[in-house]
Length: 379
Image 1 (spheres, rainbow, N blue to C red):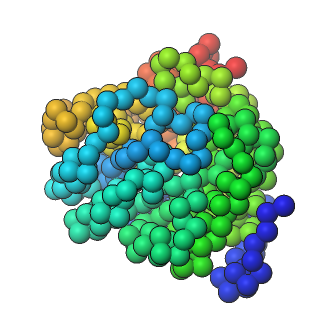
Image 2 (image 1 turned 120 degrees about the horizontal axis):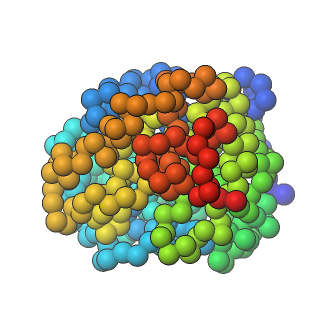
C-alpha cells in the first residue's frame, strides 16, 4: 500500500475536497489549462495560435533513455538515426523563439536522463519561452533536482508518467518492473510538491493500453487527485510503429471510450472531449520533433513532414502548415455538428483518424459517436 507522509499532507494541504465524483478540479490561470480547458491567459494565447494556423508549442523528443523501460515506448520502438546533439537542439530552440513559439514540451524517454537537460531548459528560458517537462518521476527524488525543475518550469507544467498502481498492470507493460519504481515515482512527486510546485501545475499521464481496464484507470486517477490534488492526462496508445511491434498493446475501443468519459467527469465537469487527449486548440497548434529531427504534427501522429537537419523549422512549417494544423479538416469539421461533446474543445483525435480510419481528415473512428465503420480499429 502506497503511503504519503502525514507531515507533507498537512503542510501542503494535499487532501482535496471535494474529490472526483463531486465538483471538478478548479483551475485559475494555471499551466495545465492548455491541456484541459480554454479559460486561462495561456489557453487563450494557444487558441489564438490555433485560429491563425500557427504553432504555439514545440514538442521535442530529446531522448529514448528512461528508467521505466515501457515496452510500448514510442521513442524506443521507432527506428531512428543519431539523436539530435546539444548544439542542434539549441539551434532548434532559437528558431522556435524566432517563430513566436511560446512553449517547449520536453518529452522522451525521460528528459531528466539527458545529461544536458539543465542547459537546454535554461536556453528555453533565456529565449523567453516556457518549459514543460514530461518525466517518469524518479529523478525528481532529489531536492536539488526538484528545485531546479521548479525554477526551469516556471509558468509551465510537469507531467509525471505512472500508468497504474497495480503491480500486475505495470509488470505487463515494463520490461524490468519492480515495486520500488512506483515508490520512486511517488516520492519524486512528493518531493516536487514539497519543494513548492503547485499541484495544479502537475499532472499524471496514463498511457491506456490493452492491459488496462477502465476501473484500473479510474482508481489511479482518483488516487492521484485525492492524495495529491494532481489531475490526470489520459492518452491511448497509437500504432506508431509500422512494423507492428506494439500492436498487441493497443487498447480496446470500448475501454478507450469508457476511460475518457471518466476523465471528462473528473476533470472537465462532464464536458466532453471524446477520445482526444487534449483540446483541439492544443493539437492544432503543435509541432513535434523526434529525437533524430523528424517533424510531425504531434507526439502521437508520426507522419514525417521534414527533418530539421535538412531544412529550417520555419521552412518546414511554411511548406506543411496545412498538414501540421489540419486545415482540410477544419474546412469540413463535422465535430461541430456533434452534440455529445463540447465542440469548443473537441474535434476528435486526429491521430486516431490517421491510424484507424486512414486519414487525419476523417472522423475519429474510436469515438463512440463516430459515424465511421472501419475494420482498422483495435479489437
